[in-house]
Image (cartoon, rainbow, N blue to C red; front, side, top):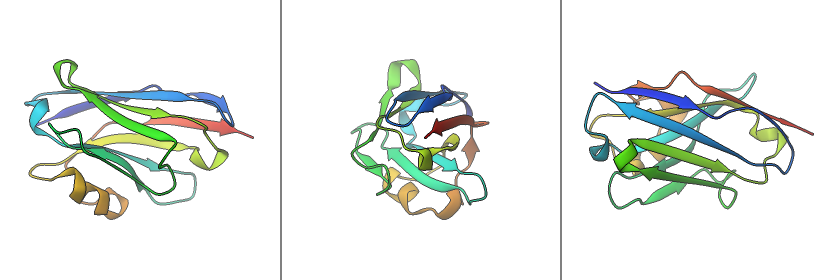
Length: 129
């Protein structure tokens, strides 16, 4: 059993930056790969980024590669998503998530986050033009 608390969303103008955080509890955090998904208004949830448990291997959606950086601080049981050069198309509710016996590489392939076992409640990111 894992509990996830995500935070850090807000309102920014295009070109700005935000850092999202996700704090995990209830299990051994260091054994879990972690991911971020997002859901824009009127659209289905989509994969954003994932990071492996120990080697810190990362994966990104093409739409955010080069602009977003996922990282983790295992002693703090925390995963981050640094978002730079934000665009209005990045406007969405962002969710951190994880799953049992699932690698970060596999998380990248999940459509709409199907198969993820644990979710944060989401944090809203709004990017103005």
